[in-house]
Image (cartoon, rainbow, N blue to C red; front, side, top):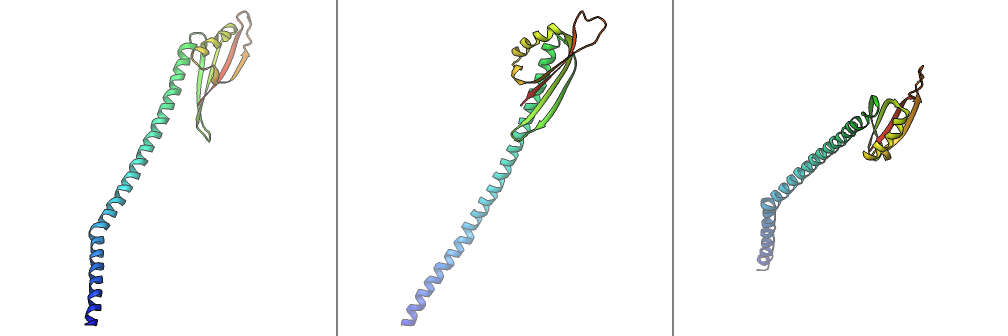
Length: 154
């Protein structure tokens, strides 16, 4: 009888362990696999969203720079003779910077009025350098000058 009771408890232990292994294989493993698949899909979707946001941010900055170029051409172009507008992009540790270089020629008096136009456009704080060179002509009555203004757009 003693042997039968020991075998009975071992049998119950064996049945419980078989049930545990069966439940694990039938229910828990498929749930884990589904969870892992969902985590992979989530990470892929997040990666795609980050890439889209990066592309949208870059295109918005490019659009902003193009808008500034058009504003400069429209407002300042009526006062001075714009010869060229050059755009250069630079990457720094924190952000992308765009440097706009506007070259034009005008009367010396118009150069002083230019500051007011830049204040209206909110560009006076983004001026990096201003270079003014006098044009050598036979008749210096009009005081024509060449000017280069460099803007830094962040």
